[in-house]
Length: 341
Ligand code: KG4
Ligand code: ZN
Image (cartoon, rainbow, N blue to C red; front, side):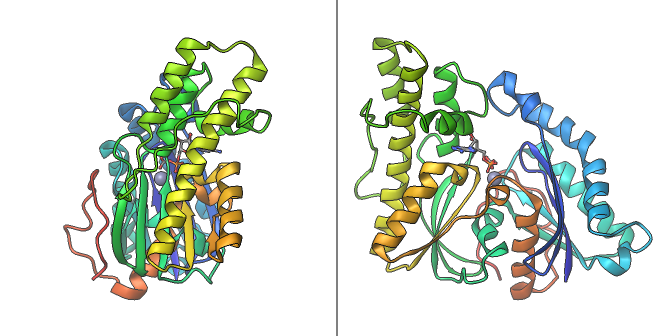
């Protein structure tokens, strides 16, 4: 089955043509980072306007790369998938409208996909041995969620962040340090040259709960900077390394504790923060030590992309078929994960 997938939930306009769940024929991502960088975060209204500007060129490039044009579209594309939530209201509408227009013109079925399901199943694109049951840790700019995937489309929610998402914590820390947006990759890069033991930031393990909280580490950084303003490049790199160490160890500790408690033999990461080099290293090392298989997508499938939406759509239609209620086809900015029926 060839799926045309569209993702516009936040600040990336992306279109992909995916064959079944895995053969990525094209995956075009247009990032809006330059537009939002001066505001140190995504500005929803600007994001919608950028999606409107970008959706047609991105769509045409993705089709062209996959060998699809308007003349052969009907033969080459079997279904159209789109992110229906959660995300920014205006941004979601642009992708939904594009998907619905194409579905209506070419008389193709629509598959609505929850953005989180894109991140949960993104590892499946490169690795077919990812099979439920597994523990999913989604770490991105908007989410930090720990979920047991009992089967494809069958979820047991364990915990989430009580305040900042992991990516948001990196972005806010970078702003405090005078670094640019998005802060995660910059802190990660600088951390490679720093001493992670220079500052002992708190590890908020929240014993007895599967939730996360990153606001404490952020406050610890703020308090530290009040006492010890950044002196030089080396000092800055040391702070970045110490901050990254604290976030990474907290995520790793809680994920492995949950996997062990629930007897899960696979941990699957997804979301932009899973690009972090220390998080990748700690999870792989802990996986080996604890005999738990860890799957982390390649960098291109960690951050928002339409290929993961196409992959999730394929898995979903395999289980649920191709008929979705009008309710499911509506965009919903605060959509929650629901079991597939
Ligand atoms: O998944 P994503 O592209 O978009 C959302 O759905 O939010 O994640 C973006 C987030 C940003 O907060 C960014 O700072 C963070 O991912 N990020 C990183 C790294 N690369 C991106 N955080 C830590 N280390 C990185 N290498
Ligand atoms: Zn995302």
